[in-house]
Amino acid sequence: MALDKQTILGLAEHLETCELQARDTLKITDEHPSMDWDDAYAIQDEILRRKLARGARLIGLKAGLTSHAKMKQMGVDTPVFGFLVDSFSVPEGAEVKMKELIHPKVEPEIAFVLKRALKGPGCHIGAVLAATDFVLPGIEVIDSRYRDFKFDLKSVVADNTSAARFVVGGRAMRPDQIDMRTLGVVMERNGEVVSIGAGAAVLGHPAAAVAALANHLGRRGQEIPAGTVILSGGVTEAISVEPGDHVSLRIQHLGSVSLHFA
Image (spheres, one colour):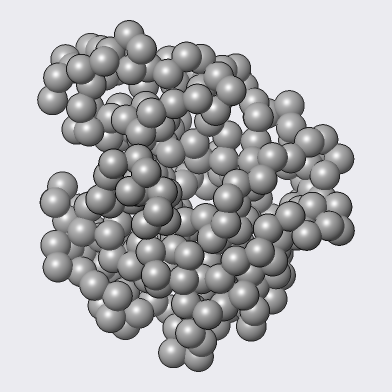
């Protein structure tokens, strides 16, 4: 690690304050160019600790940067990961208040819910499928705290990979009932199709992102607990939203889920 404890605490407080007050900031590596990956996840851990200390509950985890092409472009060989607390969860069809966010975007996701814990290293797609209770469609609302969505990967990890809100719903199905690689995904904004994709866009198989998450946590002596909701990563590019927008997601066999931005 390149940063001392006080710097990590200060950066965590700064980024969380930006989140809670819906105001942007320049990426933190501008002032701390020597920051490494351990520092970035330590800042993210401290943001989570602050939330838990105020009574939040950890209910889920998320993967980002789950496209092979994007990882190659960014010069990394693994996705990035973040956490989801209960205050991020939105009921199906509910309103998301734009005043609580800076510049939100939406991503279509295949969400996993585990029936038993997963732990790496050595976790693979088969282990993920065996440990999964069901999958269902989800929309993640990402909202980078960095000005104009301009950041590097260490800065975005520290900022909890831009996590802000999410919704899951639709039809829950067991993983042995479907081929997640070939699931068709259609996202609409105000009734117009804005993105189309298939499950294979996420690392070839969405379960591969969950396996990568388990292996990441395993290297840190942690596991994914049973009952955890996991957003496996955006199937398509993120789409910007404005006040008044209605966003709906349909995933083949899994039904639909929607949000309204007020």
